Length: 139
Image (cartoon, rainbow, N blue to C red):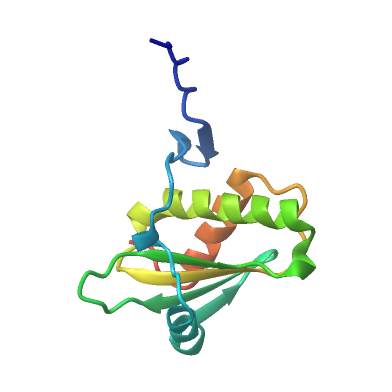
């Protein structure tokens, strides 16, 4: 039998309120906007907030099993493929960190406004937190 190395400890996420563990795991299908009608609904009915690097569109999810869901729209103008993938990863991690504090089941669409080459997880979390507070999404 092959012994697997122990999993690394969860990364730390420093916030003004203190240091917490960053969320781990994947964002399952039920937690993502997956098809065009879902995105179209969010773009048409959603409330918008602009930050320095990101835009946030929030639309109340009124489905029978409504849970907070995330959609990402990162255009090619934001950078080359690895830069866009990194920004999407950071946005998913930030959503996992903020999801427990959402008041109601919102569909959130995050779009990138401009390249953000040196973004860190804490930067993205702070910007999404700021935009969520601006839209009064947090409890």
